[in-house]
Structure formats: structure tokens, C-alpha cells
Amino acid sequence: MDRYDRAITIFSPDGHLFQVEYAQEAVKKGSTAVGVRGRNCVVIGVEKKSIPTLQDDRTVRKIHSIDEHVMLAFAGLSADARVLVDRARVECQSYKLTLEDPVTVGYIARFIANTKQVSHELNNSCPNGENKKSGPAGLLSRAKIGVNAPKRFTQSPGRRPFGISMLIGGFDFDGTPRLFKTEPSGAYYEYFANSTGRGEKPVREYLEEHYSDETIIDEASVLKLVVRSLSQVVQSGAQNIEIAVMKPSDEKGRVQHRVLPIEEVEELLKVVEAERAEAEAEEASKKGSSK
Image (spheres, one colour):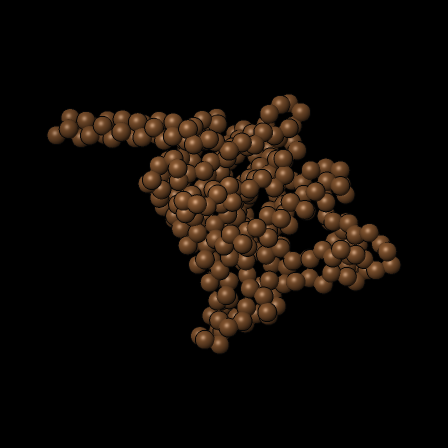
């Protein structure tokens, strides 16, 4: 197997790209992140690991705003995430300048997935004094003038895959909530709810069991679902949970994005714990009466 896991461009006889699989293992060691798409909101929650006492916690963020209507969370290597977040922000701005419309969530999810697979690096100048454009039209114009050879992160030697998985949530211009997940391989899919990181499996199983029309009826219900799902792997309380909410703020399509203060997270945890204790007591009483 040794010769097959040295380079990303070599498939093993049974069809594996081991460097991509190693990148997926890096994701599994990252902090847990969960995203849920409600009827009128998108909520993303992440597990916050403890940091040194003298470190500024503002520099340790797992949830990032990409545009006014798009946010993301990640699991994996923070340095890799920083690169993709910066590129995604530039693409959002370029798209709006070119097409005079904000990006759709699906477009930016596809852009991030394509960057993981085949990255078009922007240069600062063009031959013949031409200005480059970004977005779909820009990619076509750059191909015509023969600049910006693509950097292939899963198809050429000398590069490694991005060791991160991302949950990308937000609203399209028509007010539709969207939630996508990207993988280190460059694959991306849309979900109603999903998770990534070290606690992906138990959190996803909890979501599969408890996600329903009743649990996403409003913002409060979605917040409770996110907190309950994170509670499957986070045991230390509100200081280790970060939650962001995105929802429409008016009829003109503007979107409000906010990160919950720790006091609000603590209140949510108290409500969830009280409901859990009540459910356990009710179940115990049913078992006692059946005997």
C-alpha cells in the first residue's frame, strides 16, 4: 500500500485515493459542527474546545460569515479553513459586482467544493492590460486569454487535499433557506440537517431520529434541536458551545445574522435539560405503572 499513499494522483488497486481519505481522518479529529435548516431560519452550532488562558478567544472562531446571507462552520484544519473562507468571501463580492445579484447558497457551496477539487487562483494582472472578472463570466474570459492555469488539489502531484469539511447555510434571494455540506474530496450535497467533525456519527443519528416538521416549526424549536444534538458529544456546558442563527429580517429579503451570547446559550441548555428530566421522569412513571 505504501506506494499508493505517497501521491494524491495514484489510485490503489481497489480504487482508493489514500491522501483524500487521510484528509477525511483530519476532519474526524476536528470539533463537532451541526447545521439545521428550519422553515424560516438556518441554525449552525459548533463545539468550542478549551483554549489557553492568555489566548484571545476572538481568534478562535469556527463559524464565519461569508456574505450578508451566507455563513459556514467547519471541522478540520483551521489554516485550511482560513484560506477557503477568504476565497469564498472574495467570490461573493466578485459575483455581486459582475452580476449585480448576491450569490445563491448553492453557488458558493459549489465554488468551495470546486476549489477543493480544482482551484482557479486569481492573479493581480492580465496580459494586454485587460481587467479580469470573477464569477461564471470571469472564468470563461480567463480561459480565453490563457491565464490562471488551474491548481488541482486532488488531481495533480505536489499538492494535498484541504483537510476540512464545511457546513454552509443561508438564504437565497427568494427567501429559501439552504444548507450544504462539502467534503475534502470536493463532493458537496444539500441537507435538511447534518453534522461533521469528531462527533458526526452520534449527532447525525440523533438528528435522523428527531428531525421532523414539529422540531423545525420556528426558530426556538430549531435552536433546541441543535443544542440537544450537540449535547450528545459536548458535556461541559455553554462555554463550549457556539451557535449562530440566520433568518429573514424584513419583507425586502434582507437577512439577519447573529451569534448567540453565552447567557442565551445557558438558558437554552437549562430548558433542554429540564425537558429531558421531565421526559425521563414520565418514562420512569410509565414503567412503574406497567409493573
